[in-house]
Image (cartoon, rainbow, N blue to C red):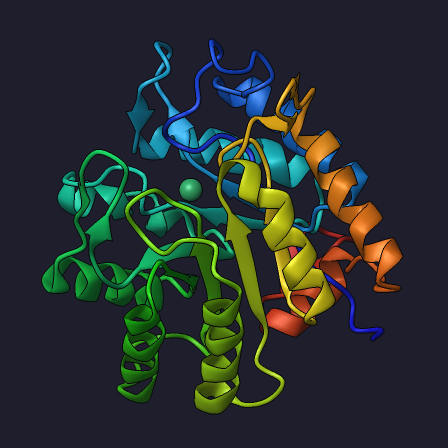
Length: 285
Ligand SMILES: [Zn+2]
């Protein structure tokens, strides 16, 4: 198994606060610093939400614009993926940053339960977000909280609503959604390969203490791995993660054990069919 492993770092999310772990980056400046350390540690994708000063979630395109500018300067070549999922119920403001043309954006294609609420993704909003991504040449990452979401992505791809082969991320371990179930995990992989081809890339994320479990399973099965403080703020039951970079380092060690090289940004862009960045002039080719 020598296929490089793409490590995605989900730096902030919409929920964790400084009171949960002081390392959670909240301001744009903190986000840039935290991402830079994670980039140096081996992450090639950053998945980002933005926050207000009080820690509440925001969709402010101006904050996303400042974050994008800082990351392009400090993390050249890194794949920027903005979240359109963090503010359930906020409607089309969830996609207000898409005209900034990040490389990727997360796209949830169906609704499901979360720990204390419904994660609302009504069909008309899903279609609108997909159309905005298509118009701005932003590649979606399909967030599969359920098997039906993978089949919905196939339907959307067949209709020409997604750019290229869908990149599906399996999300497991969210309370009241899909638990961490090994048989389901392998059936997800089987379904992605059946629908999108044997070489279709896929990724997996586990929430809380399940993060490392999904990291292990994904790396061992030839997939790509997501880590970061959005999904989990601890190294183990008794130890807070000191940084996003420390969680990335944990995945780098898993890759080494499975003799998988960690993907460079250029390799990750090639595997995902993304725009390549010319480092000489900093312009997208
Ligand atoms: Zn997120």
